[in-house]
Image (cartoon, rainbow, N blue to C red; front, side, top):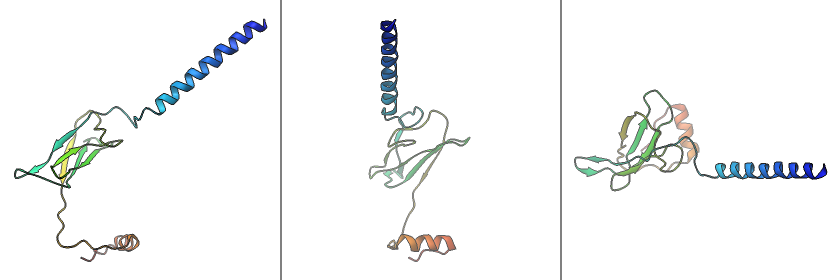
Length: 125
């Protein structure tokens, strides 16, 4: 009988090791959420590439949006859960926004900016 119990314990030990190995492999796969599809594109204005524009793919019914910032050539690759992982399959409302700054941007300490925003003051320029 002791041979039977030893073999049975060995079987369960093997199953436990294989199960643990599978869980570790899944945990280290790099996937940080549901399956996504790669999304990339080009943003131009009047035929010229737009550098530094924010691109947002927002699901109309709510949910996690995909976002990107264009490079100097106007190209972008969308990120939803990880860097450049794409977007969840589905329909989206797409917005592109480029903020134009004029003059020099003040170099203020974070604490001063936070305090000014909390009081609703404008940031001096």
